[in-house]
Amino acid sequence: MTRRSAPFLALLAAFALVAAACGGEEEEGPGAEGICATVDTEAGDLLARICEQGVLRVSTDPAYPPQSFLNEETGEYEGFDIDVATEIANRLGVRVEWEAPAWDTIVAGNWAGRWDVSVGSMTITPERAQVLYFTTPYYYTPAAIAVHRDNTTIAGPADLTGKRIGVCGACTYDFYLQGTLEIAQDPTGTPVLIESEIADPDIRTYDTDTTAITDLALGDGTRLDAVISALPTLQEAIDTGQPIKIVGEPLYYEPLSIAVDRASQLDATSLVEVLDDLVEQMHEDGTLTAYSMEWYGVDLTTLE
Image (cartoon, rainbow, N blue to C red; front, side, top):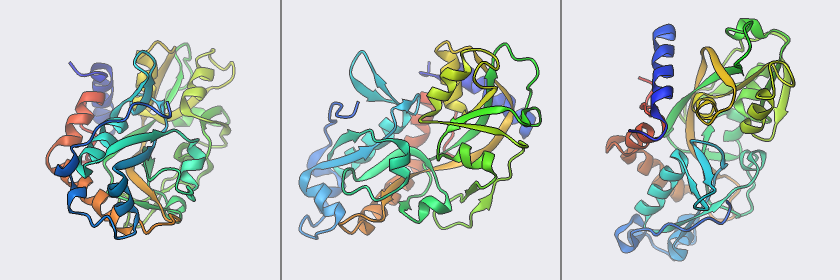
């Protein structure tokens, strides 16, 4: 059995037919067996510093289960992104330390050395690429619409004209509703405008998707008429008892990438190259597919 699989797998299959704690426990790396064993720790760049200190500081947003969340019973972070970041640290040969800054702080760049990388399901956009380096995408998620389970009038984007729609502020769902969302399928690709299918939305922004979902769960039209979020996040909310349902087809698919600050005081070029190689290796050896199946019950690591 997978951790989150059955409802999400059935839902994604149906779509395919229609559409065609900051400071958590540190994970020990494998030490001298990792990539850092071959790195010149006196090189003076960001990779050298990480290898010299034996620590990879990773920012993530723990308000997005099953991508990333805090297990209140164990006090540790868990989720797909957590597993990916931990595996990267292991392959480097270092341990991982977690940071949980606000999402708008992460995507704004200029991290001032507070963390080294973001492994937080971040979509590649032209605006973000101005301040962040991106690796090859490590997986792709469908953006979807959710309404209260009592709603009987909204079946898809055409029914959301003028409706109050909750999204995370300064995220791709916000940009989508504004009609400004551009996505590149890889860091060097040409961005493509994702045209919104929703006319005149009344956009309500939140600190996280989960806060918007909580407001939607208060009742049909009580505070919101709908929420747009990643399909896995919406399905997780349903699985944990939130009175919402997913309607319509996926609006678009997002390429999600590891990010590094362009304004890093230490040269980040070699770190980005190593991270990109590791993502490619984890695609090729099936590690990413295994994590996706474990957390989502379906392989989201390819668009094919």
